[in-house]
Image (cartoon, rainbow, N blue to C red; front, side):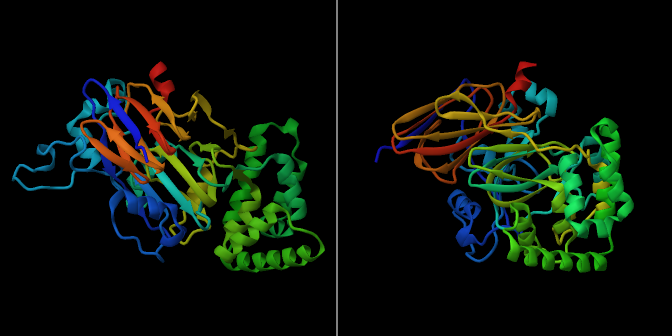
Length: 438
């Protein structure tokens, strides 16, 4: 079999192989079924526990899950030896701090020597928490007040790009849908009360967005703040009613989804809150992006995820972790309507680019058929490449075989060409190209 070829040429840069970090959150599938586990094993050579959950594979510089540079690929012997002559593991973060030019001048001027994006692969077997990510001002306050919970002071806009069919809850449903929900889901009315319900039903398009947001905020806050014992009783009624209804007609997709959530998180208020959020199904190659202060929850499937370098999450449902209901309910935008689904823009025959409205990142998806080539022209900022399927050879300072699970850092101004004789599937993330056009 002919080797696939990943070659790079630039004035000073060199491709650097990376070892990523794995997260074993309990919503991940067991190792024997997890794409994340497979990629991690291929990337690191480490043992995978077949029964342990493997949820996220991180590539970047965040302190909660740092990547390490691998000896022999673009890293000198001196960089791996301390002043005492001892060999040590070198993080990508430290290597960048020692070689800031690899980020490019404009990136350093904006973000210093911090890589502005965090690249991940997610394998989701059961729902993640209903959550939102704070904007920069709120992130700074939360980190200052609760540093053990909110690990940094950065915002966390993010984008999920489906590798498989992928399900999520994202943003609040429209006013029309909200009215229908309060008329057809009596359990929500029981928790929020008739006064809030009537406020929803009396709303119309002429009232303006601000009034609609205030009503939605009061309904959502009342729901999320309900007494746990009462919530448990009401959800039991909901499940009983849906099972009876299922004997008379087929349940809607959202009703079926709610039943699945209840099995995963019994008596959790998030089961009812799901009725108020958009139920989104992505096909492979489709993406959605999430700005600060927007509610969401990933439900099922595999995806590529990219975000600003942060790990700040404010949770309020579908989780055994720390909940901060008051902060979540006060921080949300309460914007209504279905989220924009990105299909990607072709930048050449084998590369689709996904560009969210955030400076920190963009993502390229490259699925090369047999006997094909894709070009990644030099850009003024850094990139990380992740090989998801296929194998081949990387040519930089030396020739190396590349295969599923391999991850490479490409410095600014590195021109990259990817060729394959047998087929190759990879992703690249880098600073948003619009940032360099400003």
